[in-house]
Length: 193
Image 1 (spheres, rainbow, N blue to C red):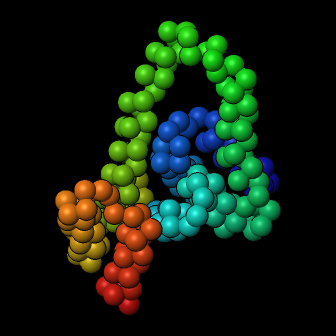
Image 2 (cartoon, rainbow, N blue to C red):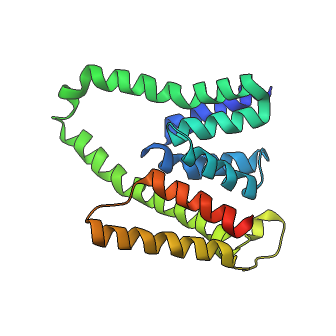
């Protein structure tokens, strides 16, 4: 039963999300928490690992969540569920792309979807930042609403932001994401031992 549930949930996420992996994080979060597959803290850890490992964040998070719930076969069906919609949609679009782009309705649709994608990514960032940096616990987690900032997390965040802007000012380009991830891992080891 869990395999069918994993496949259908991730198939729905893959079908309904626009904007790539970051756009779907909020849908994955809602699905995972409503099915009680992971806690908020575990989900945040899965996001961090998914972002740090090679490959698409959507595929990585589906694989990790599927594995946590149903082992190797759970990882397979969750990943298949999230990938299949994109596969079929891309096949369809590739077959008729040139013909579709000349219609004003298609361009209007895509113009309307863009702000939605930005809003979903921003909402996901805020939903991840509040518990991580501010220690915010929402009322819907059976606990009172509280703020307990984690000064270590805030310090790592401020160090990384400072390094990012200094590097950009000096080098005139963004720092390598790989180096930033390695730096944050080193800071995590230093601060949390």
